[in-house]
Length: 292
Image (cartoon, rainbow, N blue to C red):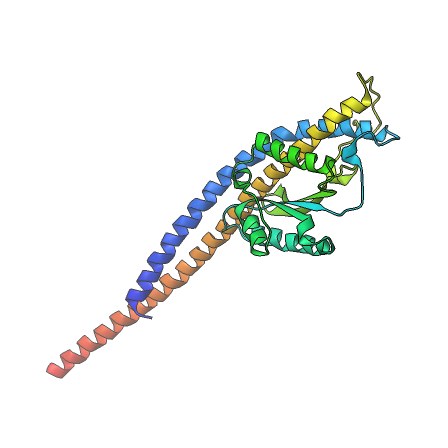
C-alpha cells in the first residue's frame, strides 16, 4: 500500500474514532439520566406493587375483570425497541424474539394479532412482515408517563371489551452497564406472580391487614389500572436505559478497534516511509558512485 493511501486511511480512522468516542460520551450521559429516573421510580413502584399483592392475596374471588383469564383468540404484543441503530444486537434481539412470539400465535391468524411497536426498528420489522402499525416512536426516544398511560388505558379498554384476550410486553431489562436482559412478560390479564415483580408485603414477608373503605372492589378498580400504567412506564424507562448502555458499550468497542487499527496503520506507515527513505538513499548513493 502506498504512503498516500495509508495516510488517508489513518485520517479516516481518526475521524471515525472521534465520532464513536463522542457518541459514547453522549450515550453515557443519557444512561445516567435514565438510571436516575429508574431509581426515583423504583420505591414508588415497589410500594404500589406490595399494596396490590396484599389485596390480591386476600381475595378468594376474582374482583377485577383485568385479572380474568380466558381463552386467547386475540392477542396484542407491545414491542419496545430503539429508534436508531449503532447499539449492538439490541434491536436485532428484540426483532428476533418478536418473530418467535408471532410464531407462537400463528394459529390465531395475523388478523387477530395486534402489534404496538414502540421504536422505529420494531415498527419497520412489523411492517415488513405485513402488519399495520401506529407510530409510538416518541415513547422510545423520550419515555413519558402521560403517553405511556394513554397507551395502557387503550390496552385496558380493549381487554375489558374483549377485543384482546391477552397482552404481552417485550423489552430489555437494565441490570448493569454491561448486561441488559431481553424480557417477555404478560401485561394483561394481571397475575400475582413474577410478571409484575411484586415486592414482599413487608420486611418480614407477612401479610399486612388493611381497613378498606369504601370497598375492596372499588379500591382494586383504581389500584390495578394504576399499577398497569406504571408497569408500562417502568418498562419504557428500563428499555431506554438498556439502549443507552448497549450503545455506550458498542461505541467503546468501536473506539478500541479504531485505536488498534490506528496503531497498525501507523506502524505500517512508518515501515513504508523508512523503506522509501532507504530506497532514496540507495538511489542517491548509487548515482554518486556512477558519476565518479
